[in-house]
Image 1: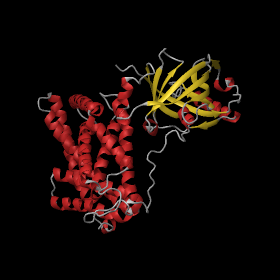
Image 2: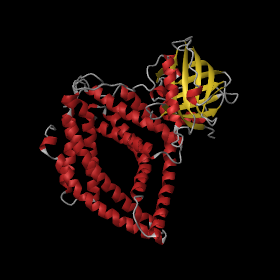
Image 3: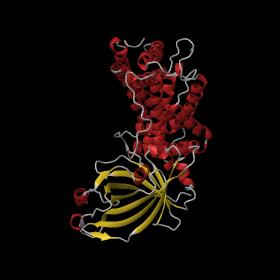
Image 4: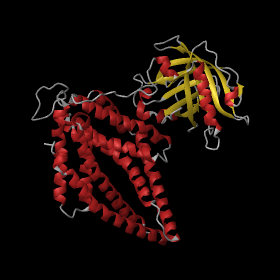
Length: 524
């Protein structure tokens, strides 16, 4: 059973000298109320290679507040504002011996087969202060913490930190005074000698340098080798997939639309990149990995396709009341189908070992790619590129394969391509785009120009495919539906067909831009 409690934490952290006297904030805040001193004991856990920390996540068990056994708290990064560090905070009551089952489920994609264990323990003396407005209501909480580190590389270190956290709802638009008071309080603290910092306590205790470190910091330039480019490609797409993996698990019945989309993009880009680099990679490893990515992408795709369909069919359109009622009925069917597809998605990422093995395989390959004949040049078959070759000299030949495949598909389609042929052109345009985007840091503007031209085709034909898929869905779902749903489906189908006709005319213009010699001349 999920007993978690969650809220969005919005706070500012300040580094303070142990002997610093904080200023009197009563006039600036509107009023203050001192709370009893607390003695907190927090144990932070992570894997041996800090997989949670790499994703900007912290997990701790703390006693000294809340229920007697203590509280487990999981903090997830959010987009920080110009003033505050924003994190989603989820909490569960529980004993310190093991993280709650729900926590382990949420972190399964990141932790996988590694073990969570204590990395550091912090003993904190907290002096809480509530900041009240003129009505006597708290709008923020100031915690003055003196921390002693137990364990880790800085055992025995003492430091002091002040946290100013906005109360939930205190930043609502009708409470205009909060923003000014907040800025004045921070200015007074900084004037007294406090300094802002981004690091949470665990970073200070372990000597980590940033609140959210750069993962796989692989720099690429025109002198980079193919090995570096492959590692960068695998690492960046794996990062994207793992960033959204946890959020897909938060609400199994309704995973966020954007997280489904981004996770699917990650699987598709990985498949495309492995296809581009296929001549250099171990054939068996690449084939198995691409098959597994296709499997995961297909499951994500069932949810994503319904999201796109809902967006397509939700476009406002003036119509009769009967049409509006029919549209609501059809969108209700879509919602039911999405809940079913979402449950299947979460079941797979929760419990199918094939998915976890895929993540482990990609994690290992981002550090040590499985090149043919290993990492040395050795004797290689034909013109297979070697990992220590300069990527700038290798990538044009690898990308040419994608270009020729696209050009061949366009020529075979002729002047009146079928919907299926247009979909295949779209797929090959996306493959070319991804390949050029990988190469852009080493090849330069030639590659970027081709990527932009390929993206135009992909967008036009993507919209065309969405219209085709929506029309097919409407045809299937109106069988046995109510008369008003059938009427609405007919109206929407007419709109979709007009849209498809416009897009069919547009894609040829997009193709002519890509097929210009100035755009494709660098390809061999």
